[in-house]
Length: 271
Image (cartoon, rainbow, N blue to C red; front, side, top):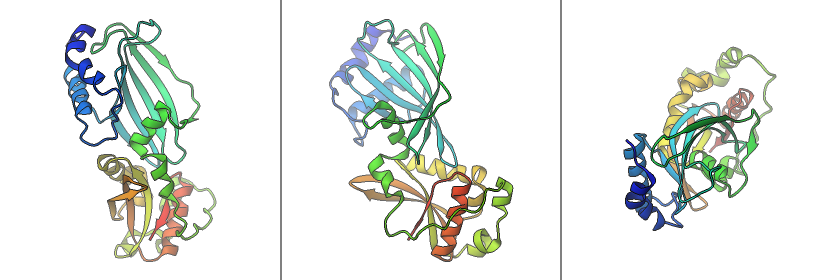
């Protein structure tokens, strides 16, 4: 398993150097594929997505776990090449949390290693409890974008033509929310309805499908309703919407969306 910096230089670093300005957002990028193969071969991890790729740095998502209503738990792996500063680790794993509606993040734990492509010496640090908004253009923003879709796409979550959402009901325990009036939320009564509620827009189909699969267990209001993942192009970018159907009218969808928001899930009525 040991792959030192010299071996990396002959195998993977040459490919990375050729991709000095490469972007992981470019589908089918050859350099990203090489970087993915190197990480999986040397570290034995499944790479979900390459986030940043340059001569000096490789950043990849290696774990993506939805935590509805709107959080994601991520593992982010970082390789830094050709840096002699002893304070900058050669390799790091970040336990990273992202919240899509607010575009905020929280780093829970950082594990640093002294060697590229190997565990080497290890040190662990823990992040604070605060959530911080990802600054535009920062690595944190790119990590959030890799799951939640870029901000330009996320803004489509509230289109001007959407009907106004009714005020959220008074706070209630989750069990009471899930057991709301059948007229408003009963899946059995609305299985054939055409009104819909959008709950999420993901950067990839796989991420959107994971969010959809986690909804029944983590968001009781969605249980029993038809859920679909729908591709769409928004401002030149492909996004994948998670849409909940089976509601007979926009007013019914608005009431359900208000209850979702009361439980912490962002949403809007999609026509």
